[in-house]
Length: 456
Ligand code: TRP
Image (cartoon, rainbow, N blue to C red; front, top):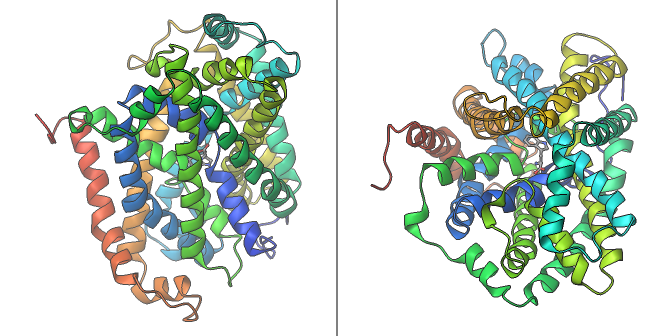
């Protein structure tokens, strides 16, 4: 990666590299940690259905939009808007995105740190012989500890910063291509084991049975936020990655592939976790610790569980790492290009700030859990504000930007690679980003603040 914004930008090395990097960004703790606990807290099947609806109707078109904005501008999240709409205030969307990146990295790094602790626990065989209750206590004791989770969080952020320093191409492409398919396989194995547990069928029923009455404003806003979070949308991560994509890649196809893989892994994670949740008598609404209790409960009972446990947490950490890389890259590309500072300086600055905020997040779960802001601890506040407010708002503005600010022909050129790819649904795409996606997001917001009622 070059040190100055002006010199030619580093591009992804191959088409597979683009998909691997974007899928690496999308697939992460959002799929395996956040999706299951959100589904568990928001009515299971109702959440899943609304979530998939949002992914298809809003997420996919906005991912395509971010790719277009990124590749067309070849600039960072804020610079892209400045370049494509000079003199207009659209770049504020980029600032919002950079702000969201700091917030997400702060709490995400904490959970990513937990995965490192759990690698250690798996290696030292410490799930063995423990009941689900003991595993729950284990998790809570660790999570509320004032020191240990912070050390892991800082280690994780240093790893992220270190890889970013190695450059986009060498840093990201290499790992994702091999490790992502492996993650998919182990989740399938866990799913099979989980389903074979006595009483596991209730978990499937919970995840897949849809009841309309269960849809409320919390389900809507959480599912919308989760759709953005899981696909890495609404804050310029895909704009930034799009700026490194070569001119021959098919942006629509890439977005489709990434969306498919991301959704598949989330649903499979649900299939691995909920049967175990029901079989072991864990509350589905248990919250942030759900994966860290449910899966060790399976490993404890499984033949070869020692081995699977290590493999699972290593891969979860890697999945988290390819996501934190994309988040930190948004910050680094922005700082280095907009303020003309070296990438190295930008990386160190970003890593230090995020580690500090992350430490506060971690403390807010234990020693500082009495300090509430709008009824939430700092961790919860950042999680909610970034995922459920900033990302959907950013996504809405991104859709409006491409729909109304960029000329229709320019969008067509970019998506068709100068007319070489046939675009069959271009009209549909335009209607979605001009009207459907922005209006749907606005309606969810209005419903949340009580100005619109879906069901009595
Ligand atoms: N999508 C990632 C996950 O599911 C998290 C993530 C990475 C992200 N980059 C992002 C979320 C950008 C929002 C925006 O774990």
